[in-house]
Amino acid sequence: MFWGCPTTPPKAEKESVLKPEITLKVASLNLANLNKRIERKNIVELARILKREQVEVFTAQGISRYPGVTTRVDFVNEFTGQTEWRNVFGEMLNVSGRQTGNAIFSSYPIISHYNQTYDDIKSADFEAALQATIDAGVRSIVVVSAQLPSKATANEQAQCIKLIAALNPDEVNPLTIVAGNLPSSETIRAASSFAEVPLQGSTKSTSPKVWYSASKGLQLLTSRTVDTELGTLVIAQWGLFRQK
Image (cartoon, rainbow, N blue to C red):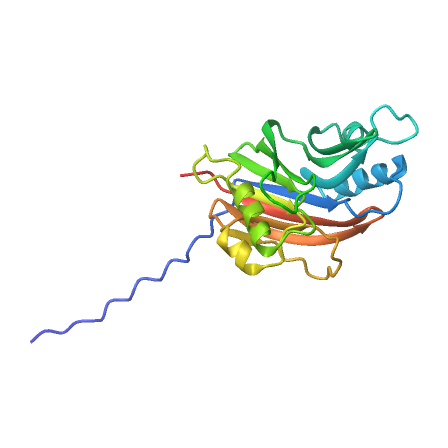
């Protein structure tokens, strides 16, 4: 005859939550429909807000510039002077001394950039998507400041997003953040394998939408909007994980 005691079951180990190696905070502002003249004080205040929010990358769409006109403040030059960040500018239109385009500003080094036009889209007038590859330390990340044709059909919007998604074909599983007047269609977004940053409390149609790669290497941590004199600023923070 044998007697025995039941063994104590081992305690289940808590599943460890991986912490990102670094975080990246990105802000975006759409200036395409701004009906006011931008003054230096507006840019100074914008730079102050971004510094307060600890933003590291900033994208702007629909910037108007007047090269050689001393009475107009150049948004790109003035913002760069206020922050000392790197910048790239993608021209969309240049008529009678007025230049319009998209810009990306970064506190991190910008490795490369490319301006993608929508040449085969019938409704496109001058719109484009500016793409920059940024060295974020742990790994590079692709940031896109995009202006889509305002009169584009759903099919044309899908074609534009397909072009944007293919901007960096040489990198395996690139991490991508796209900001601008992106489609409201969930079908188009899902087909491009992007996730959308939720913008709670923002009902303004002029607020830029922000999409990002649905990837384990890029996880959304927080998102919020801030009202400024130049429009609604969208701010989102991601955790970046090293590629295995």
